[in-house]
Image 1 (cartoon, rainbow, N blue to C red):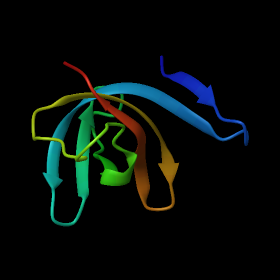
Image 2 (image 1 turned 90 degrees about the vertical axis):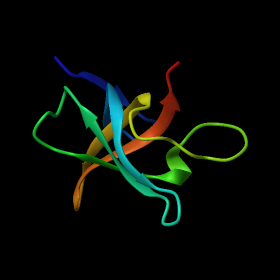
Image 3 (image 1 turned 90 degrees about the horizontal axis):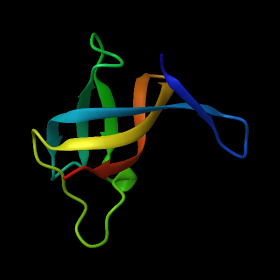
Length: 83
């Protein structure tokens, strides 16, 4: 079962763990695969990577994140790399 999290505006997000499927450092866009949504890629933008310094993820990195349904599909927020 998906774990729901509400923000202060009442928006519903889901918490998940996934693997970076693709990331283009030049454009800052990428996709995450998660077992919670196995048939859909979850889009992300580098601005949602929570790290100090350069915000880069490599293909195959394990990440924790929040996601929700947006106008153009699933989108990830608050992405943290898991060691």
